Image (cartoon, rainbow, N blue to C red; front, side, top):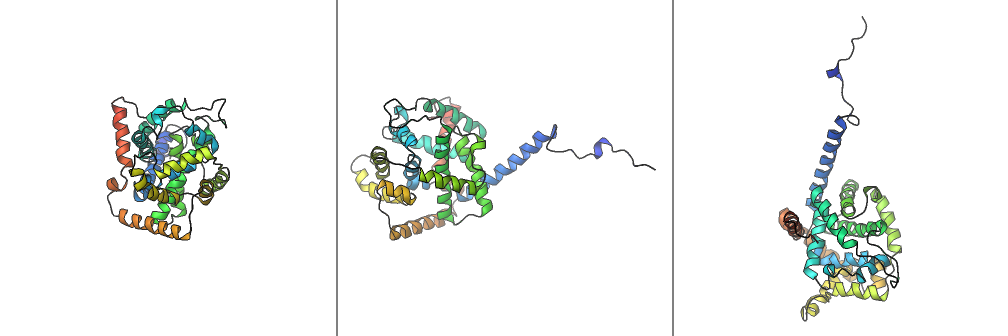
Length: 304
């Protein structure tokens, strides 16, 4: 007897083709996203935005095109020196939406920030040419935020495994794609990121004007007297500890082995205190600022 012909219900569909591919891809992406969120919930600590935020901004502004894009910005509504709480709300909310938010929230934020970025471009008098829609500059900004995220995770909760770092890198792509960075530009592996990072740090070039702006943020010069004098020195010290040595040197910030030991000990202590806390408390104020932006979106009010 010859072999019986295969019947339709005996066939196993190829999940990469035909009508079944969409369901397969959606299921795979849903599983990946669940994996990312589970890891982020174990590692994220909202206190980092208070003790490391200006340091990360200083990193971003280390590229002259980004530095002058901020220092010369004509978008007064987004200037931290004029509207510090609004800037805090939109920046921290962006981090929450990028890492923890859904697609609808990320798309709405991207559209809102695009309106602001259209106004950020160099003039004939600018010392360097820049455009806020330049994807290479956006990739650097997103990479700085990713670097700060990994640095805080590691120093507060110990080294990540190779698999964990790959998961965080995958989630970190949303930091860029929530802006203008296409997915294909994001770093494919942790090794790719660190190679890019070394090249990016070598490109940092901080002049007096941008450096004064960065140091002012770290000293909390935006606060009224006497709060700036009371809180500024500690705030600058906390943030200095998050800067790579080449950036510290260009900013003229002193740092020695004793400072490093104290800084490391403080972060380990903060990690020990935060780990048992419920996620809603650990991630504050990122979640609060994220919810604020979501409410504004639903009410039809400007997100940024």
